[in-house]
Image 1 (cartoon, rainbow, N blue to C red):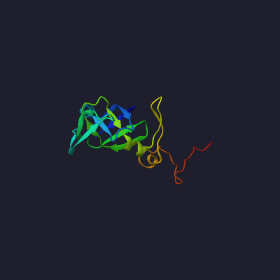
Image 2: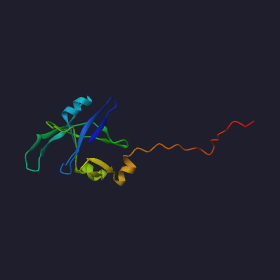
Image 3: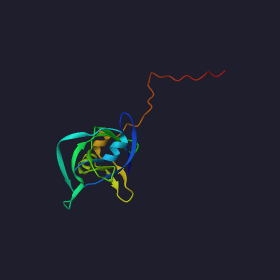
Image 4: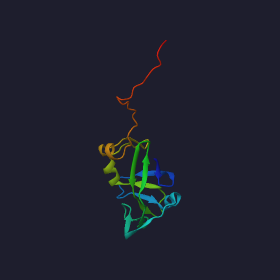
Length: 145
């Protein structure tokens, strides 16, 4: 699915995969370069493997991204940091913990998110702008002759 990554200086469209089999949230090194943001060094390297035990990407995570804004659709915004997956062909991978946090209802045929979980209504979904007329606001119409 198409998402947008926002930083203080730029906005970039990217393709995201949602994977319940992924233990983390990942961003490709190439997307970080497009965003023109510097990655940060992890305190220790992490090994990453596929379910078959083969290395995922280059097989290790050494860096993570600074916090960015992830925009999905028109209303879903969140602050998120990603682990940098060297050698990834996917721009972004949103994993199991992301799915547990947001509880999206997904149409797997179309790849569309149909509904967000309860916590998103408090934390991630932008409020719809409402026009509220104050009781003190009086609208005057020109007098009829």
